[in-house]
Image (cartoon, rainbow, N blue to C red; front, side, top):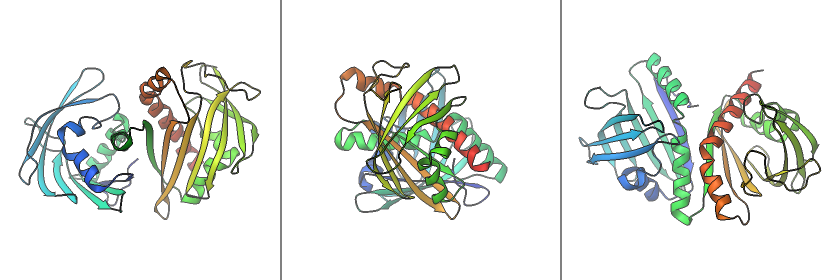
Length: 316
């Protein structure tokens, strides 16, 4: 969900664990941008690119169902490592839908990306917001985070972000209070109940989740770091009812243990961005690593449904 500065604008903010030059290159090099641009499952073909004010980028996005989406970006400002301004959403047969301004802010080894999409009217901004959310377009910026980590040190991670209309303390409590956590964690139609809960550094929790189809799974969490209202790190594994390590019923080649890092960032007095980062903890076989990589579209769908439930819980 994008935060809006004005009624006719959509704003997306991300902080990447990479220097600004690396983030800029990932945006502007056609070979690199093809590795992450678009929702999960999409691929991209660049036909031509002229990175300068007055230049253009002509490309086609290929959907997982085989549908092609032609695009032609028109650049208005190109300031090396600092800013891009361009018209987006059009092609040779259709005018652009909105103007995009992307600022790349050097944080000394990290990069803050601030993107604003300005539409002709508030109504078109709302329609664009709904379209992006339905199409899974926000996964584009999560894929960029994954690409940057893989390019830097070869680490294979899964990243997903969501902004919520609630203050940071409230969001943090939704993760560390088992009563709140049980209300929203899991895909649509699933239910969760804790068998034990000791949410503190060095502590552990165990819960049972029942899917919408009746599939039962047991999950154990071991808390490694808890920084109130800012950061939560835990190891997660599937287990049997007694807590012994087990493979999940949906994927017998799933890695044994995942390391989950959840960070919370205030985007205003009553809005918080949550970033979830998952990676394999410890050793894993190649088939387990491949299972993790291939599961990312499904993980995006599952987390999105859980976040929808979290949104509903915040409104209750």
